[in-house]
Length: 178
Figure 1 (cartoon, rainbow, N blue to C red):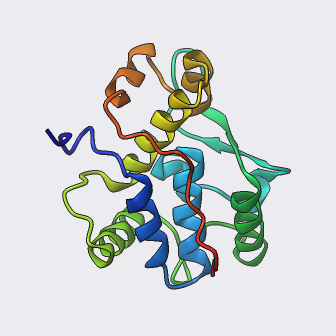
Figure 2 (cartoon, rainbow, N blue to C red):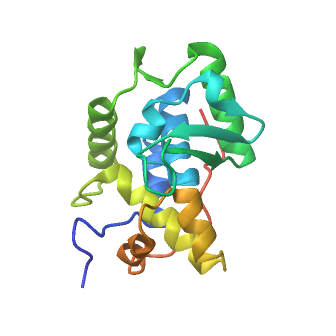
């Protein structure tokens, strides 16, 4: 049986299809960051040049009992770090089509990308990246407690929502990135 929309996760092939549909470096950076960090859409939208450091970014998400500031670290692989560094050096914050990125724009962009890639019925599309990231992390032997910390889970049982997500063997990077 297929997962419900609230449990949906992108497969490796679906992420590859999405990356083939991006029109420019900004769109590539958005998809790559979502796929390789498991960040929430609000965290991505609020990312600025001041938050970016050497292979990590400090983002502010939802405050929790354990983390009252809501601030957490996004660990960035080389490709993601370079894409973010170039984008943020130009625009100082996350943008799409020349405008500051917000959650509504991000959802609109992802719906268009899914449609172009022939992917349907994902649900909250940006969260599908988060589920895929978590499933891969666990599959590759990552610590569940560390995963809770890096994803900013408010409750330990959050990860149980993702156990049925398909597992990626790696986050695909197209050979010719924009």
